[in-house]
Image (cartoon, rainbow, N blue to C red; front, side, top):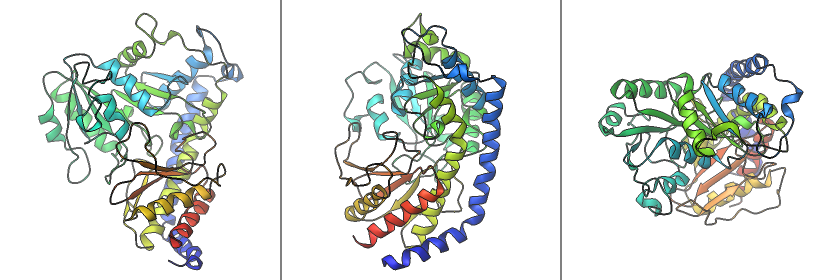
Length: 415
């Protein structure tokens, strides 16, 4: 594609996806109403923004924030902590809190995200020792998604054992050419799993999925859902942290792993204060809507430019990620460099593939973000493996998303 053709391509792409963009704004309204209602029900005031030090006993800001999250996600309880370093950390805390020697963990949505494989101790991750679940005596199995892209419920039920304690469902596509799970998928799977084995827990990796739909997994039968605050629910404002929401007894078990037995959720201070977490959650439905608009436009534009995309611009979405198959390492690198060049931070940096900890292949990442690694901000990353698929996500404003896509297309035109 010639550089001079890019503005016309983007205009055509935006015109044909206009009804989809309008529908996303309606979802934003529903989600924001729920967030606002939670703030008001918990009578959030300026006093909840203050920081604490030391043990953090009686931290009213922390405790109210967790009650707000529980309400927003339709859950009985929540842990929301700046001390959680990443989504993988939040998932690991949850898994270690819920599983013990002799238990069986089943992934019901195929292979989990690369960084979680080391936590589990899968053989392809090369981390069977070093404190993995497998090394602690937890058995593991996985069931691929069905041909239609949803959970293969009969196969999941067949894969469950008498000692299956947790069935994990990764909502997002991760680094895979697959559908993100819908809330309907999760609800159907949760109902079937609970019917077959009432003591099995359904755990949802909710990263990249918050506020994409009008409801959340914990409103649809999931016992626990887990995510990162530098993704969707932080709204591009939260500087760090993660969350676990779900049944009260489940969250209590995870809290004992977060700190220690006998202490649980009662400690954990944060001297910087909680305003960014409250404000980020309030802004999250809007930020997610902007990111989804960017993803929809990317699907429309790159399909018009001749690249395979997943999902299509008018397909249902369960996460904010847009996969674009570029076909060569050179084009993948060019795409990421184009996104980086359109960033407000470190626009002058030149992304290069590198051996990123926790990943099997070299990864290239474009992330000129205000919060380091915040994938609710416009960013793109990919493992350097055929067929060289870029995974685009984020965009705090649709206007910035448009500029970023134009930059990526220009970079490709010069590759």
